[in-house]
Length: 305
Image 1 (tube, rainbow, N blue to C red):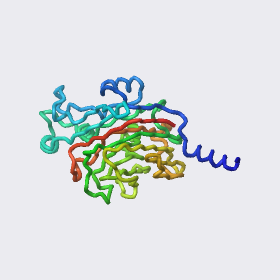
Image 2 (cartoon, rainbow, N blue to C red):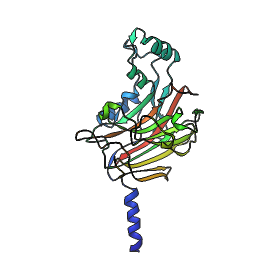
Image 3 (cartoon, one colour):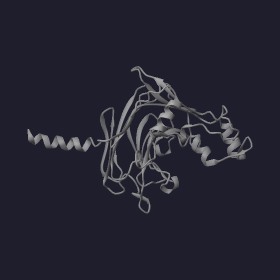
């Protein structure tokens, strides 16, 4: 019996690295306000990319600026799920006011802020190195359920060349803004490319994406929950790893590999990474698209190490 115990123990240690739980999030809230208050008090989530912006500086969120909503939707089990919705900006505002004139109702366009906010509706784990920022050479585990609704419209262009597709990011592990003042790419991200789940790996922080860095994880079934579990170690040498389970099936594993481009970003300061989820469609206006709205649901989030 002992000869079977050691291999089993090895597998248990290798594939169940999460021992300390940072937090769980079952999304049982009556509304966004309650969720935000609780999250800020407990230092779990931040909301900069989840709130509509007053682009013309008139102290109001007008109808054309109201493109983001976060709601909590009752589920059959009695709990709630969080729903992120992002509507595509009116072409008149984007092309005529912003791109041609550079002003919106007399207010000069703040281009970085404008294009950041019209492309995303996301929340992020608290970027605090003492709590939920994820450091190099540590083991981490993330679990969450995600669903695209029955009426979700898939993109249909460049499906065979994912680096050129108008893809969606649904989960990403991103460097702290302090790392190169935010001029970084996500080293690990979960994406929707046409009708497929895809993993994207970019450990070298390459601004030009390559098709070979998109790894298919299976077709998407609309209206059905999918459970993902990510385990990884962040390492700038070939000492990291990444493993992904989808609905409890191991669908990707890469061992002894580079997972981030640098351990330090300035002298002795470590390059910390935080987790984001929600809607992010970075090429909505620069690439061919079939859609004007994006909606994703999430539930049962677990963050640990």
